[in-house]
Image (cartoon, rainbow, N blue to C red):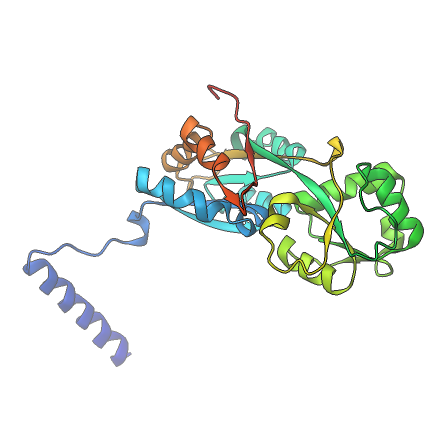
Length: 282
């Protein structure tokens, strides 16, 4: 008790001295100009936010704090009001989020694609394929190791959709040749490459991934592996803590000509990772 009173008196004295000297009181957390963006591991692991956010802050003075989790978790977090903006890549789930009243409006932002990477031994014989359903069928037939995120992320949702299209019951293979890491993309790539497994990943994370070893892209170029990202302002009418004005400023900038150019300009080893496609005037 005595220690707590002493610290309180000391703090009060310091504050009084600061004000008497013509200084200003420290800014409280409630007064700080920042927003929370619930997003995916791919936008974080690829380095995109490290590129975009300083540009946005220099222009607006708004700090963006990113919570990078799987898309499913990001949507659940935002639906609980734990964020101001949602920036993910699972359009049906995003549209459901808006329809439920948790989001104001969804905007297309950018796209890239998914790829399947694999070891040089290529046990399923899929290297060079552009037919993802055939490739997954071959992996299952060979019972070749496959590492899945298994975390309800946008990548995991897309992967499960493709297994279903291939007619493969991966639930029956779980724990055998099909391994679910329950982790983000970078961690799953580390695990998968360590066990000699095939892995489905977004291309941006793969390009930025620094532990490729002798792995290469085995399957790419199928239209079914298209990967669209969207951005949504969380609805303040449902979640009163949402900073609508600041959040809308971020949304507007991301889909603006300037924000779209910043996305297009982000490259790793000379390769563009994301391709902006926000409709003009959106």
